[in-house]
Picture (cartoon, helix red, strand yellow):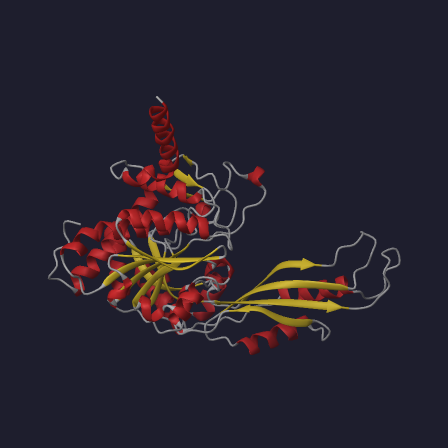
Length: 477
């Protein structure tokens, strides 16, 4: 009787322990990818705390049959690979890059569902990271695992690897930088597909319902600046001095924010607008294809398009203004502001800081660089770009695809600095209101978009295999 009770206890224990892994094996269920993403979102992997979520996701990959290798494992840095073949085979590697970490979620009362609940409702997976970037990780994993049987049956001359990293949201120092500094030879990438572009709603004017996808080949690089002003003045708010730090800094920031950014068309943006014009057609398409000739006409229109304008100017955003803690009637002696600046590829750091200094027009303001992404050359569209283009066009029939300069920087640049062709694309097409939930309230990814993303990666792998190594029959995968 005691043995029987012990057996029941053990069965119950292992049932509970394995409950979180039960979803992995229900591949025939129509909502299987959604439930897997839901469980991944439940692991609140805010930057610096990725390890538990990384262990979860790497366990999924290992149980799927992929060769998993943990590159770094610590509370604040967990990076792993999941491949068709072990990395020590040294095969040329097609790398699918995603990141484990997410930004913090505050003000829970504003959310329809708790931000780390992973709730499945209204045909969507809700929660922090559903779009940025756990959904993409699920797409990549479930696409790669469909080629395990092929890889086991024939010795392909290449590898396919999912690389999941930490720290992307804060500059990539605990993730992609470590990988590219210490494991590049081991990883042996010939191309990297990371995040960056996506479906772009509402861009085409002649065919507003036609889907358009941007695949990023370059990024505006991030430059974060701290502006500090100190001044010893009267300290009581009842008798304000003529000048004090909050007043001076406010005037200086106003001058900065009223700047008109200089419009610059780089080779990347010219190619982007040319391809957009080709897809658009008509008079607007003609103007876009000949951007220099029609510059006086198109720039005013571009200034009205927030996203488009950000691609042809260096932007400055004031993200915080702080003074030391004190009572409301105390005039602070110091004030600090933080700027999030996004620079076009051809802009140098020193020349941009000098422009900022001139606009502030206050020699007492000290400018310090908090973080800077190094300049890297854009990726020139090669066969791997066109493989992704073809995959998108197959899954989204009639879609347009163009290379773009992305307004935000991410981990892709760590690979570009090593000369690796790197393309950024989250292969989903979702409404603008859902894209705007990234880093915000009620982030959520439609289940059908998740499944279409899996289909794009699956087609991409098939196309690469058949195009470069056509002797292998992958039609059944």
